[in-house]
Length: 185
Image (cartoon, rainbow, N blue to C red):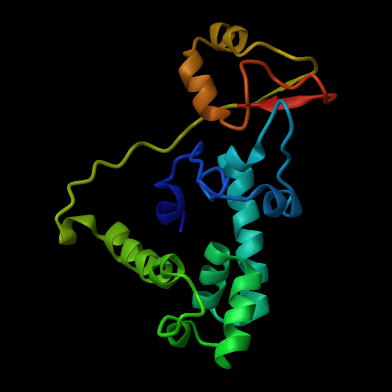
């Protein structure tokens, strides 16, 4: 799903104001524990947002009892899927795709995810020559005061760009001053 949502980009931003790899709206992100303020936007935190997306999808599956409807609701919102089900009289994603009760984007969303799964499992079978990046590796440090990311970079011997890439939730070049401690990667 993250492939379809953002092409795995932590700072992806949609015209609907969804943000991060999992394209959380502010309200939904907050509901699933993602903080957003002047200093951080945890919708861009790849670890926290992934856990939140998993919790959200679990809740959607429990609500609909069907992964296709859960994915469609992730894309369109529960209200739109609830209305579509109520209007069509059927709790079936494939049936909904044949009606005018959901937008085209949502009609193509689940098939795009299914195609991504197939392609991601064996890209060479579909003509893609993919070089897999090595897994991200990092250590964390707990900071008890606001700290400039350049200072962290210099102190660790890592580039500022890499520090920023490991901490995409930070909205500026300093760790938040409004918390007793901040764990940075």
